[in-house]
Figure (cartoon, rainbow, N blue to C red):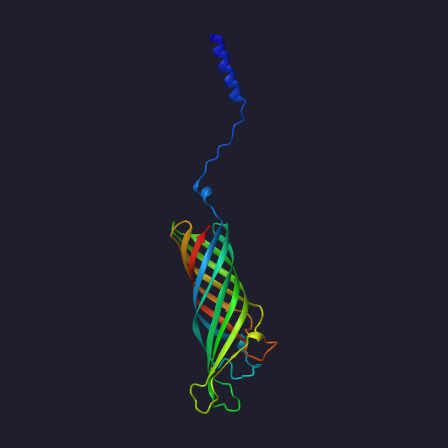
Length: 247
């Protein structure tokens, strides 16, 4: 009987030794929830102003549009979203879509060459859809805060250029009027920009960011080949604010 028990234990031991060992994997927090994507919802208050490319208004129908006549900018609000992919902990690449605006006023310019004493203001309002391509260089300085440098290149598709001519109540001047150059806009306009700031992380998946930002439109707003107009472009200063969500 004792021999039977001994043989039974030997058989069980040999059976266990013949089984293939499975690899043991230990899950950490980084394995459980490690998404490389995050979505940024943007709300960007800007002061937007006009610049003349090469200070050039010589080909314009309105030759008094020159560097001697400074435009006054205005405050606008852009909004949009970006999708970022975290290539590394300090290097994120993103693409987005933005509804962007521009606005300024030419003050006291001569629009009636036959009556140079009739000074008018030309108030301009511009809208466009922009597709920014961004690189986010980020440095985590604490558990809840990261510093960020975000250079960007944007493709801009302008769709509206509306102007309002006002003679400021001059009784002898023509009536105030409006116009648009929507059909004469540069179809694809490039811009460059940079934003500096940081993100406060409320949790590992949700953050609030604020960055100072500057953006410059590289090309003429109005197509110089299709219309005689000053070589206007836009320069924006302001904030890039919003929330970031990891998913």
